[in-house]
Length: 614
Image (cartoon, rainbow, N blue to C red; front, side):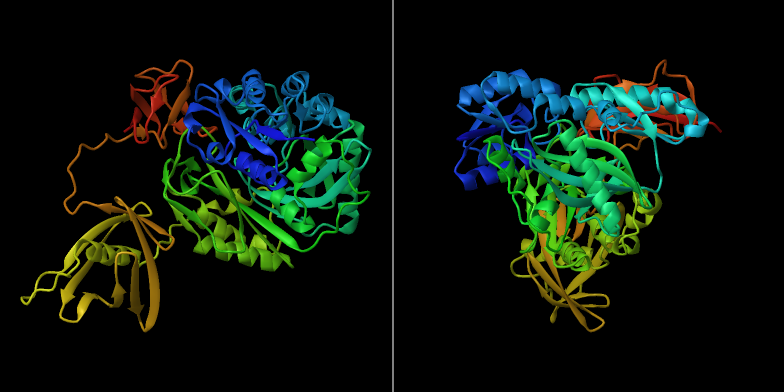
């Protein structure tokens, strides 16, 4: 039997596997980069082994170092998690050659299915070899790995070569494999998948469907099980194709077969030979622990002849440290507090006080709600996220709540183009109009135990805040009756709770302050100095780094003095495993170029200046 498991991964998935291992009495081993030295997954594991360096290519993609770590720590099995080396047959072979148990499919099955090009050939689907205008739009896709890395939608034939090059570079960085291919891109399809689980005795389970259509940058944001609105005939067909794909390669363990569904037609996309990020919704609906079943299968035990029955509906939302309104830019900083109401499952790799760095994916957590019906599950998850304490850098929390309550989603009419159509309305700033006043009153109480009333009438107190990118100013005064603000009655105010009455309606505002960063209920504010510092302003046309990261590429031949066109890509910045294109804001002349390939930049760093044409 397995006695000790090393997880060849980090963050949330490592913590999730460790949780099941602890329940089963199995010892746990973590591996970590230098950037992850104090990460949660290293703290909850029984043992942790350092992988020197910070870049994935030096650490989590070094299969040789991970195998050595397993042997040094006395592990007898390796769980790959997802991403990184989870679909790398060479790594699976190295684990087996070292005499360790591999918690996953055989290397031959990974080889057959982990490369999306070979998987399509196995299922009788050919990728596009020559792309013409008639084929557009098309999707450039990495042959190895997933998570949206190495994927590009191409709508103009003239852009194809550049997008192929960019996709290869991103795939090589994320998975150590730069192979890409091209397939047709359906604008209005739904992303539907089937969870499978197979043992070494010939049993293959199809554990229902999942819908993962709400995606940003081809990476899933909201998932649910079962996929709504499918006919029984289509569901049966999807199950049959998924089981057939598993049997075709002698599959063992957990895997997912993915499809693009348009109407009543399903197009095979790929098979992921690993556990998926969204596996908790299947666990909730079927009442199983997929990691425990993976371990059982790896030990050679048999599954029951039939899977358990599905019950109810589950919805999962991925909470990211990112700014959806600004090209989904990842955010960094301290996660001061993360908590959701009872009844919601929260899978995370962070805890209060942890730092969100630049090296890895910006996902903070997955929140999952399970209920008897789809409508109840959606309502429960949206309400829980709305009431959750998420104190730290900006996140996509508001986007998630609005997405869950959007009519297209509640009526199950969504598709993969959901955010292309609705992102602007879903990210429209809507801060609480009284949040700044609550912050000011709480701060006043915290700074003055005895209050500030004077017998001689004084001018109102003033405080300034930045809320949703805009500056706001609030006024209040101390009177004999207590604190007073225009049009608002202050019922109570202390450092952490302010109660205001507006037009006869009383509202509570929970306030938490971390330096100049303030959270009032779900509104995030930044305290501004009373007298602004007259710092130098950047010249018009300045391009500033939207997040800390690495300049991975500068456009070929780009030099100061060059003429550029509005929207022309100038350089590419990589942060948190995502590549961001910095483009010319207007047609004009590049008067300054400060960025160089390989340069580490901080948020707000000046990258280039484009002087617009008069």
